[in-house]
Length: 388
Image (cartoon, rainbow, N blue to C red; front, side):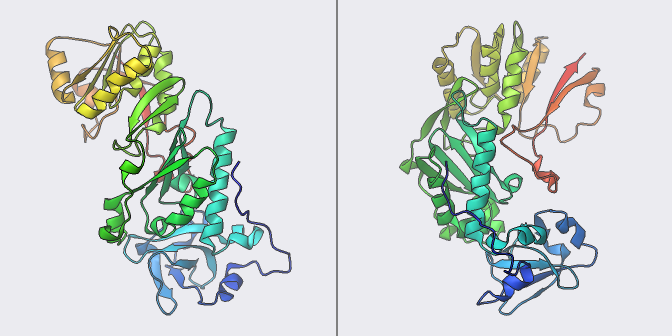
């Protein structure tokens, strides 16, 4: 288990308000004052203080990007503290609210201690969910706002952790984050991935980013998910693997017995492999990426699947579907996990002369927790439709 410095409650005689704690800081702490009518959203826990909600900033010299600041209402009473950014549309990423500090002030205004505590909590949450296990060693360890570390994502693949940074404060505390993860006994090596386009909007000079060379880690990693083996590429999309679809992939295996299955935009074959494992009669995967399809075909071999029942094709999704329609070809199950193909969904079934029924609605796997105060974190929608 991770052994890190815990946030221990201070004696009851110690001051426990943010204002008092800030007044004891040798260099002082700037205060971001919210506009009238904007306070409640953030008091309720929304972690992203956008610049349009800010009335003014008190403090000399003005805070710099990555600095700790207080967030206060119109009376200058702090409601929480967070990390400031002078460039981003998100002026402050809230880290703790006043009520939390009152209950346990030891992490207040201390990013290092807060990181240790939140990462430790994230590890314990996954352990309680049974992750990792003998059947699954690819999972999300830290899910940004869902684990109350906005801008930080950590995926674990076996004994390798891939850390994805999309906030200036994450870059500032890079070494401490790596130290925290190194203390997790499952992890033997770390890859750091800076989301350069997002960080550019955060005001960082890309030349200053220390993007770690993937050559320092294996180019490909073998992982297991729900008993199915995958060879993944760290050069691939996201952090290398879409762990958020784990439960949706497993569901496909439960409904594929005896079915003819088409997996469009299949990437490395996650849904297709689950359909084949679920005894589908025939599975076809389609994608435009040669490297992804190379891995998909390798995954057939890894799982000892019959290549006569599962195959992958390199073809444009729209062209494939048009050709299939011209041949009146049909499938029992069609899986669509595409990039943006249809900007307008309204009336699509009606225009096609079909009737749809919603059978199942789901989202990301349970290791991708969502903060209810930040519904934008529920980014993934998985819908099972019956088409008649």
